[in-house]
Image (cartoon, rainbow, N blue to C red):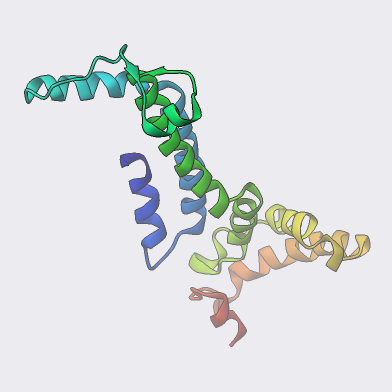
Amino acid sequence: MGITDKLCQALQQKSQDILNAMHLVSSTKSLIQQLRDSSWGALLEKVSSFCNDHAIQIPDMGASFSDIIRSRRKKDVVTVEHHYRVDIFTSVIDFQLKELNSRFSEQATELLILSTSLDPKDAFKLFSVCNICNLVKNFYSLDFSEQEKIQLDYELQHYELDVVKAPDFQNLSTLAEFNN
């Protein structure tokens, strides 16, 4: 699917831009949902046009569709169009959304986005006191007392000003280098 191509490329890059990748996850989920909700008609038109251009026979979409599984279950007979739209088109998209949601839950995405504030690249360009405080509040609240959370905010404000000026921090690209 063309919709997921940008996301796949971003996730495969060696120098991963986590923030960009997480935004791509979110926009990809939205685009896939839009495709599911409102693109069946456009897809059917494109496929019909392709079939007509290449002399491929198009089934009567209003005709009854039955398969072995449906006939054994004695389910209601559905149209060919319903089979293609619901059983194939919607099912494939639902599977894709389920996979994205299981790999990138809202909580995991939020954790990764907030964690980018700790990225030392470009002299901590993405550093954000607010994001780090939210990281502590949303994911590590049991590890900090209320007093420590308040103090952390002030300490991070000092750190934010100091890190920009300190020459030792200017050329860092990973947190591992920060520890050396």
